[in-house]
Image (cartoon, helix red, strand yellow):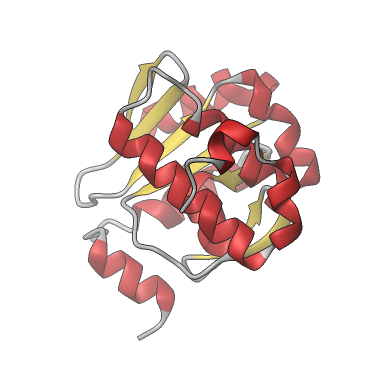
Length: 173
């Protein structure tokens, strides 16, 4: 079974939500890239997730929100827009934290869930995971997953270990 078919089955994406979101962004020249766990999957052995995290160019967030809101359910949170649709358990989370904005210019096309999508550089993916793992407002279980993602990245890219703050290195197994 191909990665995309497997993932669509796992997230019960009967509405082809992922493809529709990506096409909407591309058709409207919205600059974006994948980050978070699916970006880690593009660089390391994949782990199943119901989320797809992306960052949209800071000056295009409002346009993206309006376009997505016309077709999908969009909820605004302090640092993200969460996009969902009937017929899919997939959640697309658009990061609105401006720290992620520069990730887009350093992204490159990689395989994500059987699709060729722009993915943040491995160093930027790591930086995002470091920010998440150090965020005291984030649920402890999410921070543990962030640590596991950091470990997955440094297994494949040992030189990245030098970029990890000592307080996180001490928590890695």
